[in-house]
Image (cartoon, rainbow, N blue to C red; front, side, top):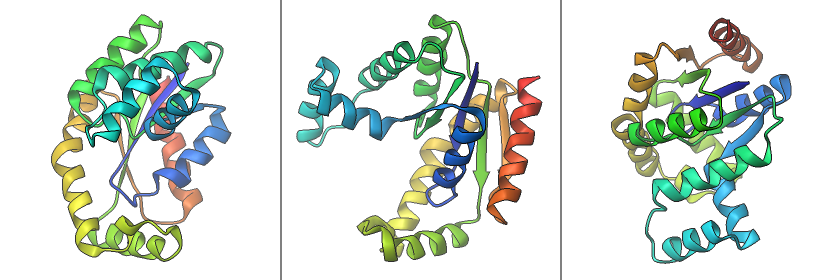
Length: 192
């Protein structure tokens, strides 16, 4: 089973590359945002718990998110693998994900991190903001804050996977297919 963590700051191209990876490897896409919305819509116990917290402006705790991921893993037992998007964001979440995958008889194959300079990220997000309608893509100060938040809080997760020899850094500037080629090379190397 191929399990990927796709990593990178806002605007690095994760969404674009994620679609290509899902198609290439027939992976199930696990976006924590999508999971939360679908569990809430379905009215599951975890979804109701998450909604109550979100309605109060409280972050959904890791155990609730892990529970939702566990449900998705069990629903897709015969999947070729999973691509984790937006999770894990902390080392604690990465450790919980490792434990969950181990319980399900699998593990993370590799983490692919798209590396893009801050100025390019800012330019991309401002450009995306013209069509996305997302207010956080239209304000340069907010963009820089999001990138700083990523660097401070999420980057330690890269170090965690580096310690497991599961980390691959890919330069995220260039032609989409060229970047995708580098990602697939990293995956093939990690899958051996």
